[in-house]
Amino acid sequence: KTTPLPKSMSAVLIPKHGDASVLQYTISQPLPTLQESQVLIKNTLIGINYIDTYFRTGLYGSPDALPLITGKEAAGEIISFHPSIDRSLPQYANLKEGTRVVYLGEHTYAEYTALPIDKLVPIPDEISTEKAAASLLQGLTALTLVKEAGGVQKELGLSQGKWTLVHAAAGGTGSNIVQVLKVLGAKVIGTAGGPEKCELVKSLGAQWVIDSKSEDLVERVKEITGGHGVDVIFDGVGKATFDNDLEMVARKGTIVVFGNASGPVDPVNILRLGAKNVKLLRPVLFGYIATKEERDQYTTELFDLLKTGRLTVKIHEIYPLKDVARAHEDLEGRKTTGKLLLKV
Ligand code: NDP
Image (cartoon, rainbow, N blue to C red; front, top):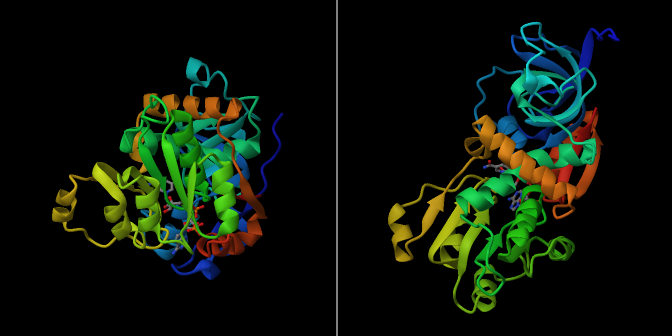
C-alpha cells in the first residue's frame, strides 16, 4: 500500500535569528527529497530541546543557510526508503513502512523529515510514541552525562554514595538526571525555581531540594553535606550558576557544565580549578553516542529504564506545531517542567 504524498507540508522556519517571534509556521513547505541512504519519516510528535533556542538565536551556528528548519528529535512512522538502501540486510529487518520510530536528527520541526536510515530507532511495543518522543534526547543525555562525564557508576549505598547536585532539576534534562542518579544510588540534591518545581523534584527522588529563587544555594549545600561539598555537579544553567559551582564543589570534585539556559559561561581562568583540584567538563551528548555501539548500548539502557518504570517522563504540554513560538517562550521564561512536545 502506498499512499500518495502531499505536495507540501507544515513546518516551522527560522528566516532570521532572534527571539521566539521569528519562528514562522507554514503549511506550504516542499517535502524533503530523499538522498542516498535516507528514509522519509512522517513525524507525529516532535521533541523541543533548549538547543533549539540556541539555533534560533544564533548562539550556535548551523551549517545550513537561513531559512532553516530546526529541531533535533522526533517520533513518527516510516513512509519510504531511498532505493539505494538494501532492505534485505539483517539490520533493517525490523524497519518497514509504518514502523514506529524515534530518532535524533536534523530539521524535525516539520511534518516530514528525511534522515539516514542508521539514525532510526524502532520504538519497542511496550513504549508509547509519546514516551519515546519525550525521552530520547534528554534520557540519553542524562545517562551519558551521569556515567561518562560525572563518573557516577552503581554506588555501594547511600552512606557511601557520592554527593551530587543537579541544577534546574525540574526541567526536561534535569528531571532525567535526578532519576538516573537515584537508580545508581547517589545522594541527590536538586535545585529548582519555586515551590511547585521543588515538589516535583522531591517526587522524582531527590533527597534534598533547594529553591534557587528563595534560598542561599551555597549555604544550604554546606549545611546539607556537612561541609563536604558536592562531588559531582550537573549544570545546564551555565552563566548564572558557574561561580557558585566552584564554591559548592568538594575537593577533587567534578563540575559538568552542559548547557547555557542562562547564557554561556564566561571564559574561565583554569588556575581557579587548583584550589580544590577540580575536574571541569563541558560535554555534548553527540560525542558520547558517536558510534553505533555507543548508541545501541545507551538506547537499550534507556528503554530498559522506561519499561521498568525506573525512569518516568513528565510531559509539560503537547503544543500544536503552529504554537511553537509560545512553547519557546514558555521554555525560556522558566514556566515549564519536564518535556515540551509539538504535535503535527
Ligand atoms: P529545561 O527544561 O531544563 O529548561 C531550562 C530550565 O533552566 C528552566 O526551566 C529553569 O529552571 C532553568 N533556568 C535557570 N536560569 C534560566 C534562565 N536565565 N533562563 C531560562 N531558564 C533558566 O531545558 P532542557 O532540559 O531542554 O535543557 C536544559 C539544559 O541542558 C540546557 O542548557 C540545554 O542546552 C542542556 N542540554 C545539553 C545537552 C548536551 O549535550 N550538552 C543535551 C541536552 C540538554 P528553574 O526555573 O528551576 O531554574
